[in-house]
Amino acid sequence: MTHTLSLSRRQLLGVTAASVLATAAGNRFSLAAESNGLNLGIQMYSLRGYKLDEALKHAKEVGFTHVEFYSGMFPTNSTAEQIMMLKKQVSDLGLTISAHGVNRFSKDADANRAVFEFAKNVGIGTITADPDPDAFSSLDDLVKEFDINIAIHNHGPGHRYNKALDVLHAIESHDERIGACADLGHYIRSGEQPVEVIRVLKGRLYGIHLKDFAEMQKNAKGVVLGRGHLNCLEVFQALKNVEFPADAALSLEYEENVSDPLDDIRQCVSVAREALAKI
Image (tube, rainbow, N blue to C red):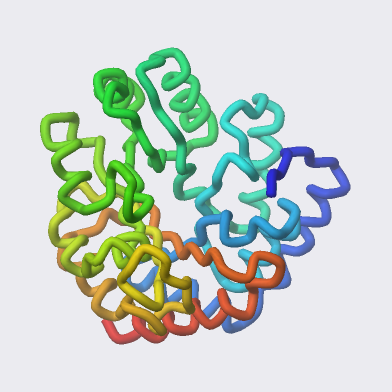
């Protein structure tokens, strides 16, 4: 589903009012996350079945403090006015934009620069990315100029960045600000253990998509955290061990039940909160 950015004054006022509706459980979750230095947010693709206003309200009500946008909800070609309005909407809800993606990069340096200009104007420090092999020369220049990280996202079996070592080999000769956004669910589909992935990518890990699958195979079904092959406690401990940056994007991404995912997302949050409390 494609979302367009169209925010009226009435919508802005409505979202501002909605910011007071966060549940007590949600607030407790946020405090637990912050106390451990791991600020769990949500990739807004998880809420793609809702309009923008509703999606942000739900993110706040569930208890998230950080949101990672994608172009369907926040296009990279947004005008300066649209960027200002959405930043205010997010800020009024007490939320922080942690990252944006997944964005494609190519050898077109001008097109690549436009995405970085967008990120700079939004105030985003990490762009989640799927760069073509011939994009890296341009990206080396841009991450230096803008001091914005690129986090390469893996899409699972058959993708060019299928395994953790595929990402590591792609970035090893490039600027240290070019790193990884490890989608742990897709790595599970690729037959890799999430904790080992985190260890392998230590020092170049700028994002996590927290996701679980029932089987370690290509055509697996997405499940609530902990019901497949992802152990949240082990994952969070591993992130602490590799000194996952405080400003990196740690985003729950739940892709199932598009029309009504909220109960499943709350269950994911409950599992994550319990794990965070044990670190």
